[in-house]
Amino acid sequence: MKATVTRKTYYLMGLVAACCTMAGAFFALSGDPIAPLESVAFALTGLMFLFLAAVKGSPTREKQKYFLCFLVTLAANVLFPGLPTLNYILMALPWPLFGWFELNRGNPVVRQLRLLAFGEALAAVARVAVALNVAGLGRSGWLYYAMEILACTARGWLALTLYRQEDRRQQEKGE
Image (tube, rainbow, N blue to C red):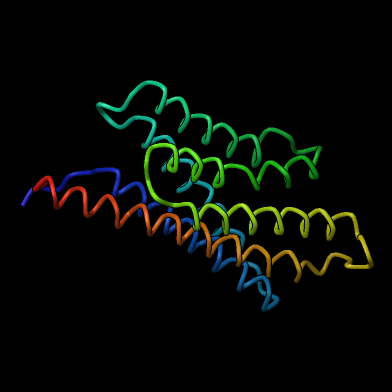
């Protein structure tokens, strides 16, 4: 048996990243945040985008799109430490961008992409509202973490759908 690393492996990384972020949000809701989970999710998401950009035989344009997803992920988490509101908005972009690119590759992920865009937008608005103490939300963050769970569910659904589609493709090819 020969072990190979394929797109399916990279989509699995995305699924694990979504699960890590979701677990972190559940822990934060319970009052016991675990920061390393978010770091693991960030690393796995970035690696997924980078590895997809490096898939052998992929068109250059496709590689550039995945690399753009990586750059947006990096920008959201590293480049603007003094502008948290900008970070919160940027954090909502990589996964929907990725889903849109996958949709344009011919993957039937319209429902997943819709839920993902909705969930990411709600999470971004909630995070900004909590950070700015809009409507007396303070720093509790419960609203943000609840919306983050929705966004992570959509991320996981997208990654799982892509994983299953790639698995079917590989079985049809006999890989």
